[in-house]
Image (cartoon, rainbow, N blue to C red):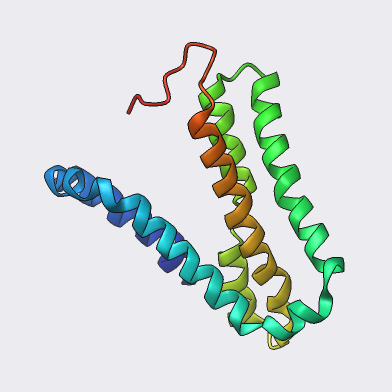
Length: 155
């Protein structure tokens, strides 16, 4: 099934590689952020290019709700853990994860299972806002020190 290929396989490969080839993982770790950024750019470009005309036609009436989905997801993902006693690092991580919903997976599912071409459009727009909101949060928080004693550098 598609969810195995898109979600479970990369996780299983990463965990297996980390367990059995730790020296290899340590060697490639410095370049993984660049690989992640390039992969995200290609993913976003591919999704948007496939439905560019309907996205442009929809205008702000599509952009604003999708943008708000990711922004509100990030805010709730930060404040809910914070209010329920989680530390700053955990709250930030949850915010990034919730703002970066699985838009790419939604796009792929829409492409595979819905004959209507327009079914892909909201997910394609969501891929862009997902990448922007999650990346912006990560960059901002990288330079905002954690004040509750948690250490973001621990691994």
